[in-house]
Length: 166
Image 1 (cartoon, rainbow, N blue to C red):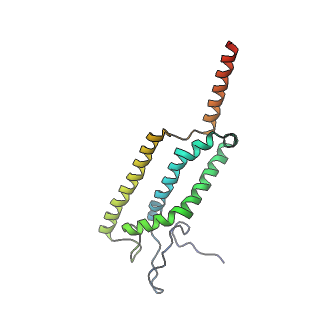
Image 2: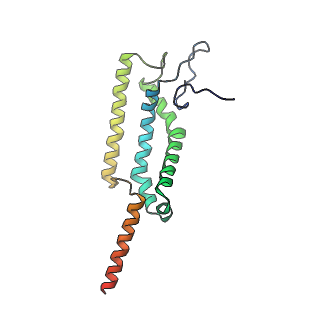
Image 3: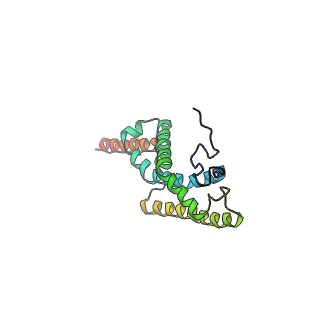
C-alpha cells in the first residue's frame, strides 16, 4: 500500500499524533522542518569535519577510496545518525521552545518571534562551540584524500632526498 507524504519532508517531522481524531494536528510547515533538521545535521557535520574525516584520512583504506565514495559514505552515516538518533530529540526541543507544535502546527506571531529568537541563540551556540572546538583541537578542516596522499608523497620525496644526500 502506498502511503501519502504528509508534507513534512518525507515524514521526518510528521504530525505528532496529538489533537483529536476529528481534527488531527497538521505536520509543521516544510521551512520549520528544515530549520529543525539543520540543528542536528550541523552538529554531525561538525563532528565529521573536526574528528571523523581527519581520522579516516590517515588510513590507507579511506585514502584509496574515490572522493565520490568517501562523500557517499559520509552522507550515509550522517543521515542515519541525524534521522535515527538526533532528530527525535531536536523535535522535542523545538516543541519545548514553541517553534513547532500548537493547534495549527505553528505558534502565533508572538510565540514564533520568541521561539525564533531562541532558535537563533541555539544556532549561534552550536556554531560558537564548533569554532571553539576547532581552535582547541586544531581541526580547521577535514583533510581530503588527495591532501593526505600529497603529504605522504612529499614526505617520501623528502626521505628519498635525504637518503640520496648521504
